[in-house]
Length: 302
Image 1: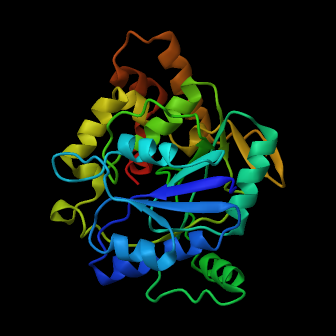
Image 2 (image 1 turned 135 degrees about the horizontal axis):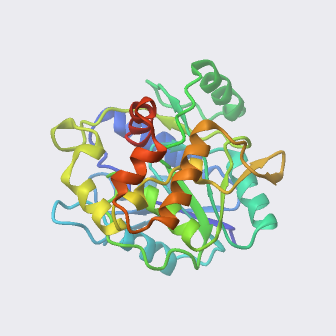
């Protein structure tokens, strides 16, 4: 029996670039040891791709009024149809390699209750990947040459024990807020939040936002506002990888190094706990001087 069930809700297989990067991602997942893959939704071309790659497909995902899948339904279907110990929701533009599985195995050995995430490496790609022998080494070299490690905001996968996250709100996939809530929830439950960036290269294939209404980034849409409301407000969607409790480095769990951004974040959480009755904006004005505002806002909108 595999250790991990990956599940994802890809976009329609219509736009040529989206088709290419999603095929690259799904193919990379099928090459991983100890992993099975579930694709969710009834988007154009998805059933055919699932059959081609020999992965399971469940079309009957609940959607919002715009027809976009709900994360609560995705989690429910994945949990009900997996016998594996770990689940992992992952965006369909992410290329995973063998170090991902090793990080999952290692984290499981070191902690019973944990959530695994990482920063991503943004990668410009214009042609299908060649998955011939040695493809991982070639890809790593190419990604390093582009040198686009994304800021510690916007999480593209979460790996966790199967019995976690049983009370997911009806977030809309592909809109902002839900991934931040996942970190907030883990911290609230006192689970170890493990940032495996030092040990894993997760490659995000860059794309535009033409698949979204008006081609606008996801954080500019009303469905993002609804995600924030379901998360319990702005305070609960301020969580990022900066809020990880541990990092996985050289096979060991270490405490993240203190940086100015992490210090600011810890101070904010401390003050929120004490002065919970004050408006969120007041706390932000205290812990985030004006010289930080532009930098912080850019971080959370990435």
